[in-house]
Length: 332
Image (cartoon, rainbow, N blue to C red):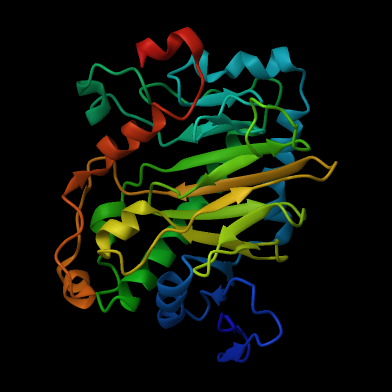
């Protein structure tokens, strides 16, 4: 594997990473380097992002909030269970998230973009995603901290999409028409030490993300997040202070006609510590129609590999199979 690249904020040049062949590219969006985003998406689908302007203390605050919630007694956490909302928003107990038919050994809270009274979801008979994000009453500052963090993540997501557009030879703001009302998702995830059981898979089973961009904020735990390289080897994506881990999702495959490919990744947390991560999924608008772009079809040299799809339809097809909600499954 060729060495990845680090983009230095101060030097404003690309430095070879000769001594770290199994690492992710580090990309700085200040100054913005669209070419490096393009190369990272072509070659890996994952990269580190620095230069985002957020302090380490600010980034750590949302993780501390998550850990405070996960430290609550089970009966208090279950007050905001997904089974008491819309089967998507809220708390999932250990093992309730399912990947490839196996329980993932983590617990989490899922929060989604708010749905107004005229949102397309209300025209469907499905209950999924039509609720509101539940707020744990035990943590008074929960809502304000989350809301502020969401604003910051949406700004970073849009900035990365600007760079992606330029890397593809498009006008900088091209993707805004598809993501200016992002149907974002945020997960707050707690990972205890992996349990060995025939019912449990791993901490989070291997998967690609099904949306647009993932902006991952994780604690200092090493050896947990693993990314499948093009050579078929699992490489660790250990945290770097001050950096987010960014990866592209399946909708980017569609737009780029597979010039960019979302990458399989997984979590195996075998250490005795309790790991916390907060991925923010910067997604297309719910009603955005996603299809291969002409410039990417031409660059790929092949016919369009995907049919047009409304992102909301794609999202619902995924969410309804994510969780074990028992007898409530028929109500989705």
